[in-house]
Length: 123
Length: 106
Image 1 (tube, rainbow over the protein chains, first blue to last red):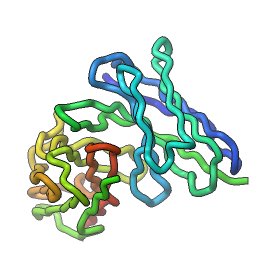
Image 2 (cartoon, rainbow over the protein chains, first blue to last red; image 1 turned 180 degrees about the vertical axis):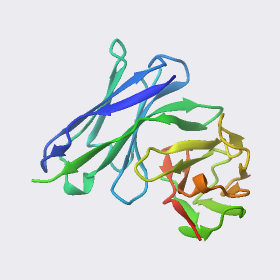
Image 3 (spheres, helix red, strand yellow; image 1 turned 30 degrees about the horizontal axis):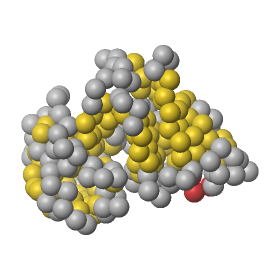
Image 4 (cartoon, chains in turn orange, purple; image 1 turned 45 degrees about the vertical axis):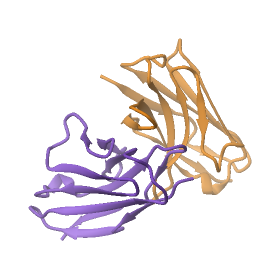
C-alpha cells in the first residue's frame, strides 16, 4: 500500500522559511516514471501545484514561485523535502504531497495524496 | 502557464441524476488531463487520468472524454457519496488545476 505523510510546522511567521517533509512508503523514490509532488490549497480555494522531484532527481517548479522554492530528497529515508522562503500570510494553506506517476508523452497524474498539513503564516 | 477553466463553478443535482462537468484549456493539451474528487477535510482522490482512463477502484458511473481544449467529466446516476468538489488537472508543461466544481445535493 502506497502512503505519503506530510510533516512540518503548523505556524510560521512572515518572512520566515518553511520546511516541509513528505515521508513515503510502499514505493521507492527511485522507481522509474514516478516521483513526488507538492501541491497546496488555501482555505476554501483551488489546488495549486508547487514542485515535482522525479525518480531520476529531475526537478520542476511552479513558474510563479520558482524563486522561493526548493525540493530535494533523501532516498535512504524515503523523504522529500520542500522549502519555501520569505513566507507571507497569502501562503497560508494546506500543503499536500502526492506521488506523481508519468504516463505516455506529457501525461502525468497524482495518486495517491497525503492527508495534507495546514500551515498558517501569521505574526 | 496553461489556464484551466471549469464550468459550472457549482451545481445542484439529485441522487440518480446524470451530471456533466466541463474543463476548458487555454491552449491544446492533447489528452493530458486528469480529474480528481475532493470531499471536505480530505485530500483529493484520482478518478480519471489521460482524459478517459478510469483509475482502479473508481466506479464505472464516472467517465471522461475530450481532447485538445475541451474536456468533460460525466457522472451517471449520482450516488450520495458523489457530492464533492471536482478538479481537472493538465500536465502539458507546468501542471495547472481548474478552479473546481462543487457538486451539491438539490
